[in-house]
Length: 263
Image 1 (cartoon, rainbow, N blue to C red):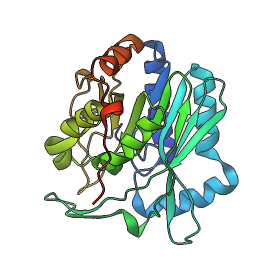
Image 2 (spheres, one colour; image 1 turned 180 degrees about the vertical axis):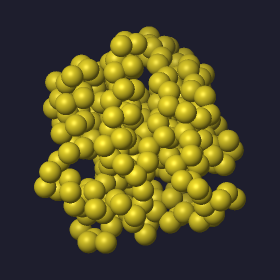
Image 3 (tube, rainbow, N blue to C red; image 1 turned 120 degrees about the vertical axis):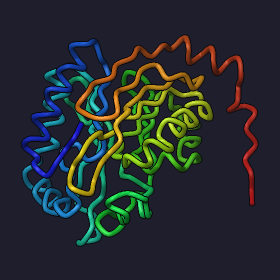
Image 4 (tube, one colour; image 1 turned 180 degrees about the horizontal axis):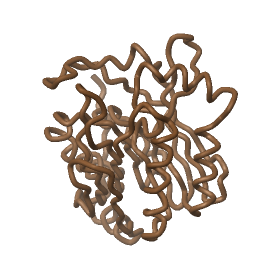
């Protein structure tokens, strides 16, 4: 997606893409980070509105039921105990439109990047979550958001909790997408022996904010099954084989071999 500051326009864009994915046979659909609003200054206002009107929450439920898919709602802001900051929350709905689980982003992107934006300070607007989460639906799905992908222990813990598919809704910058996106997704897949679905924003959001696209699906051996282009709205679809998952894990049982390090 190329989400912007208009929730209405973003939801209209997402609805078309969800329909496209469903018509291609998808049972699980993952939206990117900030799919409903790509505007840091507007996060608190949307969270306040959601607390009473539930526009995005209800929309996600309706889309899941309408298109008969398990829907991972990238991330959307909700109120936090800190009145000046929101939680970046990922809602997961069943094909019946029922809420299955939620996860609040744990790792916040505070970094200096060599691009037009230069400095990113998510912690100015977002409070970190505390707990990991998995959800049982079409598979056992481990939840994460964007910057989490740089912290491998998050995913090892999801694997130990039973995860078979890891979702990584993201808004990676163009610079970090080109440098690290694919290698991080493939590394998390190989380390955990899970399928990994990385749904990224991909385009020009403002004068200084450009995301890198290349949404992709990776198998437990690290093979890229399907990948989007760098820019533009697009849907990527792949079939995830339970047999492939079992084969990789049985041939190299890394979870059984793992020895935790203490420093």
